[in-house]
Image (cartoon, rainbow, N blue to C red; front, side, top):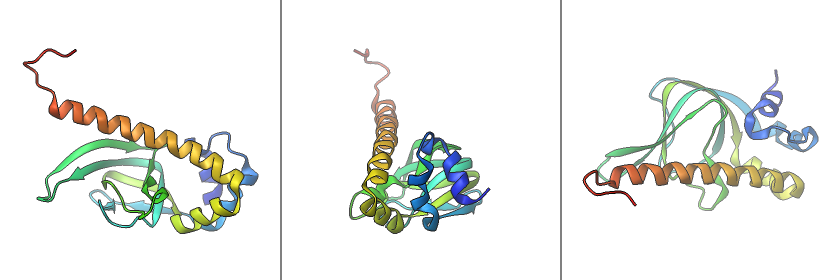
Length: 156
């Protein structure tokens, strides 16, 4: 399968009009990462958005001392690197490979241009991206609740 055909089969794009998805053809290529490789670092510019095909990625947030807290584990069907949507296009998390990963990497600048040039594509893409961002926000909220929970105090 071509990278575009693989992208069409990714859950993020389920039911997406193939004609609209075709605008990404020049933007997408397959990438592979080994265990412990880092796809992106917190506060660094995101140049690629990754649609995970296989493997596992840990999203974590790190403090200034380098102490990191896991936020969410991403597996096949997930998306990593949605911070490219909002300037200055920097990652909010580190993304570290737990098991070898294969992704469809989409060049973010190319993707932004495709969205600007084809508003139907951009609108449909953003609706799906917002759903992914909301899932990430929920995972972050649950992680914070777990960290700051006081087991001796009753929950309300």
